[in-house]
Image (cartoon, rainbow, N blue to C red; front, side, top):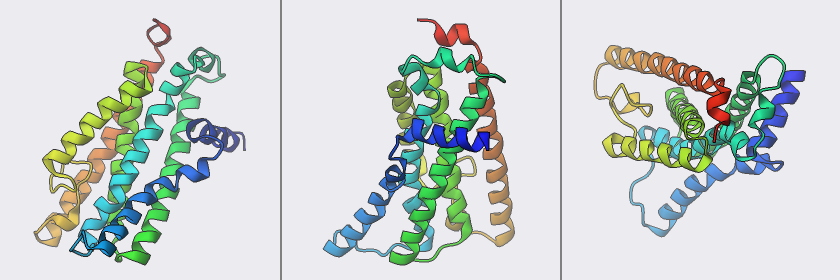
Length: 228
């Protein structure tokens, strides 16, 4: 119960007291796609292969906004020193904030999935998971950059550059090294597609865990974080 209460407070710290409104922000993207279809500016219908991008793009942007606030918000508010006095270690706060951010992401993605099912098309679970994987990856990357630069703005800019590069080399890529890997875009036999998908999912579980651990290790160096 204490951890649940801490998570609830973390949600309010990251997304504000009206956090339930922020989860609706990603819905503006599918609403914009509907508008394009209605006015004839978009000619093609959205198919299952495009759903991961449809859901993933707004979710990733939302995830970056959440990630940069996990640690750097304490720096900007001058409350980081207080975090080091928490019994059991400051990592308890960061884990609670990560849990809070993940819950917000998951709820927002569920809403996006429902809207997509109602307005566009049905899609397999791999598309849902793929979008969530990309969002969580960019959430921890945003957290890492913001902690490294000790600034939300600098962290957001660095993460935006990485996202731009990712989009340029192929958004919804067929590359197994991409967080946006989309198995539906692979034109191969089912055995190869399954193998590629498993490799990608395992790889990014490891990468996300490694980034999180390295970030926590840096934040524990309080002299470095509290220095001017």
